[in-house]
Length: 109
Length: 114
Image (cartoon, rainbow over all chains, first blue to last red):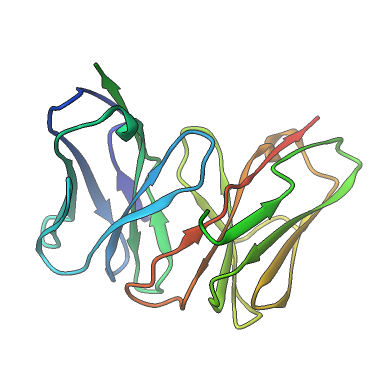
């Protein structure tokens, strides 16, 4: 079966750095997405990785290793508004998105 | 505002009721999706439409019936639902189904089945 694993919840301090990991086992791979979802709101797109390596976008970076079936989202200079759930999703060989259950990130002052 | 709107935002219905969820996208996309989001569970893809044609139906019970009259509008007709169908129903759209096309989500309809 297809599976996406990510931690259920993480806590970090304002101003610090946090890394949210995602491991996947899917039938084929056609890219990995990270989305942010604030409570009661729509998920919004953060990043897309299809080749190995690091993609940097401001305070957020996403890393992919296809051989290890592994990705992480790195958030720097954390702000209170970064408190949200972070969803990892992999596009499989049928171009369908397989989603993780999300990581709830709690930022403390 | 994401460009994808959903109505109603909240819905409470009994098991014998019939209701419809509406989604509209203002982004000129040609693919639209219905997802179910339950607490602490992964997003479950329910239906996919590409250029108004249904391309995916992930073994969804027949009490959920989608309708896509054009590329901008998507409906989910509900009838004789069960309490376990209570969840957040999200609509999304994308330019296509392939590769890097990101999906844009609406705010969702919070459904409670009594």
